[in-house]
Length: 468
Image (cartoon, rainbow, N blue to C red; front, side, top):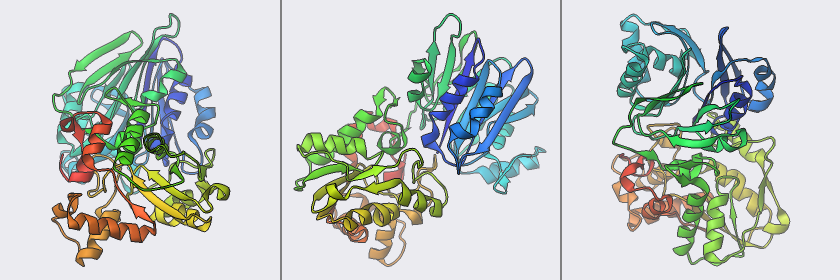
């Protein structure tokens, strides 16, 4: 996971860059950085945010930064933004996504005489690899197209040159980039962001969302189109289910509204009797509100999140850290829980370990009478090939269930994809028993697609179907 933010204004942009980047903090927990350009040249700063929030790590930096253009990133993969000297001159670059053929591409570049300076965790920095691929082009735009064609996976890119900030959405538009505008006479400018929810509080309005593969350049003098969008679009459906911020919208579809529609769809096909509905904070809340509205059951909060100190327990790459965050961030409200039958809506079940060991256990320990789990998407069957949404096939709860049922790992899991099959029923029941809950029922894929509201052929559903 990761988020990008860029800005080009007529005045010093450092405050806008700082707050705009900070509004992407829900997309990463490992490292972050900012870079600016002024008449003095390029300047960047990068910090770990694994033990501190973005604001506390960068608040002093941004006050010292001066420039009318800047880019920022929050990412769990590579240190960035980087400043690169190339045949196109010096530029700063930030990029988020996943490159599955990273080692193959790096080996080819080394054989062609390229070198790598930045190392992340002992390996080649993904952002530097993207920069080297771009350097193969006849121009920056040509180089971005070359990189997008060579990369197996998905990558969104910001490149800041003395002329402006290039913004390129990934080839098939799996992840978003939106342009915001401020028409103020003195400080007017443009911003680009993964999350358009970052715009309103810093004074920007949505101008447009980039299409798949589209490239534009932002400068203090305006927006220039560099490459039109591609015709094929496969937007990550998980953006609406979990990843995206509730106040954001992608392809014109509001995240919070889509989550409420998911919850309503679950409730329409559910006959369970319960005293209240609750969402696992924070991403399960919208789904639970929708369920409560549709079912006519009160919405209550048996679990509350200690927001100031703990972010998402799903994003850290280390299982130990994920477990610690999951343990500490949720507090149980015993007075609400004790003796109650409850429907608990969550965005999804990926590994299932945190839900089982930290959420469900707290509910039982505080006297829950019945716990009915309702994930807002189908069982995740395949690790994501385009981002860091799911990391390995062995981690997935449904794959552990299939392994237990079959006695071994199997390649053909088609029988388990059909919600009307006996195999599917056995898989769900195994997960239910493993989680130790009263009942478990997933939202089916057709209802999820309808709730999102984008045509099926424009959604990436790989996590559930194993194909684009």
